[in-house]
Amino acid sequence: MTTLPEFLVAVDGSDAGMHAVTYLSRILSPNQVRIELFHVRAEAPEAVFDLGGGEGANAYEAEINNWINQDGNQTQEFVDKATKVFTDAGFPPNAVNATIRSRKTGIARDIITESELACSAVVIGRKGFGTLPDFMMGGIAAKLAESITHVPLVIVGSQPEPHKVLVAFDRSRSVREGFKNISNLFSKSLEEILLCHVIRPLSVPLPVTCTYFTTKTEAHWLDEQSQRIVPLMVDMKKHLSSIGFDPKIFRTAILKEKASRADAIARAADAHGFGTIVVGRRGSTVVDEFTMGRVTRKLLSLAFNRAVWII
Image 1 (cartoon, rainbow, N blue to C red):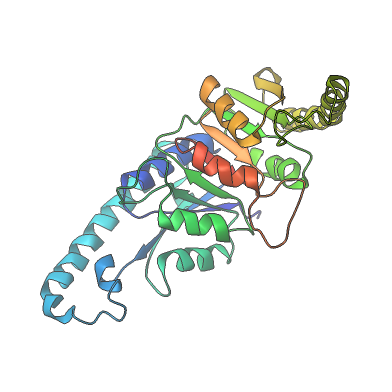
Image 2 (image 1 turned 60 degrees about the vertical axis):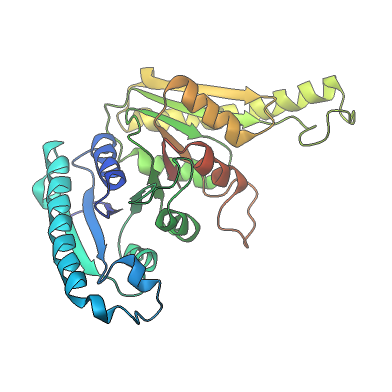
């Protein structure tokens, strides 16, 4: 019997966590994946951990115990509701499981450890219960963004539209092979898939006063790079057709003369209502010391109201 890919969905009981659950239930094909709802239960309020070893908290033991009981009840209610969201969307009940586990090392570290066992992707809401502005990412999501490199990571903003997918497409293997893998798990009811490639001029990021490259040279460069990416886009569309997507929903865009690739992609998503952005963890240029490329890092800030798949 074939084992289905498992999505580890890190939940904390917040609205952001439920947004991630709802989004995932709508973009994934119910019969192609398993869902593991994963909650790391704290044994005391976060403020207690701020004290280091918890010294000084003994005087509040009764109140903390009451908090633990209430938090446990609320967590169970959240997990039950999240499970129902998936089953109502058509996921088989035996394909949705929930694990509530006491904190061992730390919330982010425990999620990372769990992800290293057998999951195929990790999903988390952009923020938890914090009061940070929308454009800022919560602490746990930020830690996972830097640390989850072995499987795709999905960071879900506030209620993104699930039926339109923009792929930040380039020649890197991580994007081409990564998107082929995850596209197999997407619902075939998607309304649009856009393969979007950005070509920067040779003169970027030089000052506008520099004239090292002539207009003819720039035009040749842009045309040459366009011709190199087109066959890869054609190959991707063939793959998507072969796994059951309607070719009518495919679009391609080559954005030229853009100073910032991340900004161009985020603007395209905003302008055309794409709720999902798929981007490679690192681009064609790989530096081992860094776990994330510049474009991906910037997109996480710019596309704060989208679901960003880092593959």
